[in-house]
Image (cartoon, rainbow, N blue to C red; front, side, top):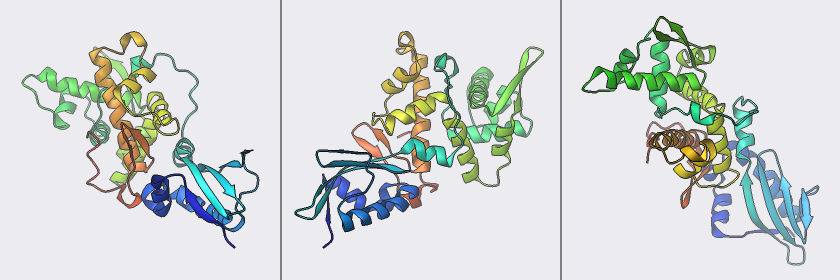
Length: 287
């Protein structure tokens, strides 16, 4: 007689009934093998821990907690967590971060991924001047300096993501596309460009810190969380911190939508169905 699988709540039951809707593909591939073992034997050998008939198993992509009732042939799944950071590390090359210092000095305030990609393409084509860059990116202003400011924001963002480097030439800093930047500029399609940009973002320490908190640590993605994680306490209430926190928050939401990695938003989770990840309609990450 096989064991019946039950769930701690309806939300968990719904997710297991619609794996591809709620979980990344790697998780969907692993889950059936463990469910089959639970249905057949009522337990998984070599659990990570066993306390009071509560078992926890840890796989490559998830952690699952369950309780077995052998008398009634029931296995109740009480908790399930995706190993989001491990999944991202398997998909992208992520560097090891050794220091948390000076994060406030490197937070950009240019948050539209499509314009970041466009900016790297323009610089790769030879557009160096901040005014010309801002103009070609579609920014408008009554004064030239307002348009140039947006070009400067783009330069700063690309430099922090290590997609360009700037070298002094007279009174100006001239941008030069790095090897990583060239990969984006010369990629054959937009999906590849976005994937390469996500890898650059994930290797930017403030983004990686926030990703960890809003996935596995189950913290809600808010401006206050971002500021607490990446700004010194004395600077967290400044207008600049508010604007730059918005940048990190929008990037994290965009990464979640593109990769299918669920993050915690105030009062909800954000998780796209896997077939919808690359839809052109999924550009409302400012909502």
